[in-house]
Amino acid sequence: MAHGSTALIIGGSIGGLLTATALHRAFDEVVLVESDELPERPGPRSGVPQGTQVHALLAIGARSMEQLLPGIVDELIAAGGVPMDAGCDVAIFEAEGWAGRITSEAHVVSMRRTHLEHVVRRRVLELPNVTLRPGEVIGLTGDGARVTGVRLEGGSRVTADLVVDSSGRGSRAPVWLEELGCARPEEQELRSYVGYATVPVRIPEGVFPDGVPAILSHPTPANLYGSSVIPVDGGLHLFGALGMMKAYPPTEREAFLAHMDKASSPIVAEIARKAEFVGDIVGYRMPGTRRRLWTGVDRPDGFAAVGDSVLSINPLYGQGMSVVAVEAVAIRALADRADAHDGRLGARIQDAVEPIVERVFQLVCGIDGRYPDAKHIGIEPLPAEVVAMARAMGELACEDVEASRAFRYAVQFFANEELMTQSLVTKVLEWMGAGRAVAEVHKDPHTIPGILGVADPPTVPDLVPHG
Image 1 (tube, rainbow, N blue to C red):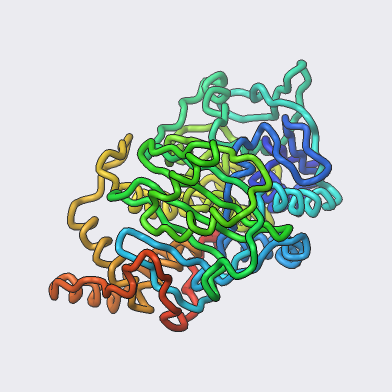
Image 2 (cartoon, rainbow, N blue to C red):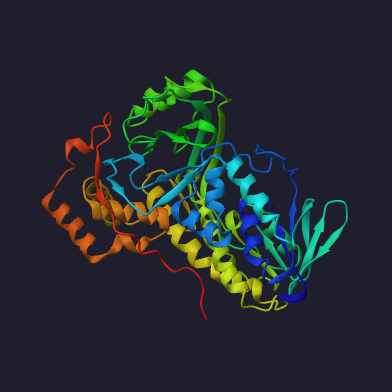
């Protein structure tokens, strides 16, 4: 820990909290600046308009949070979070049929975003040198060579050795850096025009298929409508009506149910009609996935960006919280062996975050790039042969343990390597060459197939910098 050192983080949401945890051992003081008035109890707030929507803490997110805050997974479960094996407890109906269910190492915790953030915030603010300062950042201090702190609304300033922007998709940092004479980062975007609406419910006993606590009927290029239901804290479930390419779900009850009726599998909508709605249906829309290329811009020392300020992902894939958790693990490994007064720490943090961003961005583009009308900005559409290969792999994953494992672990652990093993590629090529089709038992949208088998533990990529 460098004597007299201060790290300042813009934004007190999940990303800011985990980044504070990552830096608190390397700095004397870590200050979180948050513009929202934070609720004393779990609840929505204006700075997180998507806070009441369906969220997911992926397996790698849960593991990373546990590394940063030992015991946090047990605390989430004690607060009502529902532990699940995402390999078999979440039944997913895709374009090709039901994704093969496997007993796996992809252990997750399902709970409302508002409640998860409350537990994490309470734990982080117990750290002795982490403080929360109310206020709205309106600019950076310093010059084109080095950032020295922030300006707050009302005229006050806070100095810091390191400023980390975790203010989210709507970050003003590009504008603030431009005011200091620096170039804005370039952006890449895949607009798939995502919409979803969520409502909390109580569901009677015996409504779900045996052994399946969560169901997702995903939108596809052939059917832009989707639906989901997952268990959360307090004995509740969250229903989600999903849409891609501007198939935005409505928030009036009957229209909401009618939207879910259009999903490729009718199971979620059938359960919804037996449920007791206990809250309002709340909608949310966003253009899609956007990436800021911070590593490609000549930025000043003493500054870094993380989380949605770098990569804002199509929320239907539930990766946002997990991405920033993995980033925080990488940041901690770097900061623990660095000099907090070294102005290049910000640049090294940005470089450490980049491989994580690249991996997830490519994965999401591979999925959303299949929509013919998706708009590519600064990136090239996928070649037709890649799309055909992915379609065949999806078909194989309906009935093959190895293929299903690869898909599940790519999403749950950002383990893209699982999709490119020689044995799996050979299987896919043989599937395509033989002109095989998915068996009807895996394509019936009315019946969820049983578990295929047991998956080996994942080969989780090492995304933490060394040396």
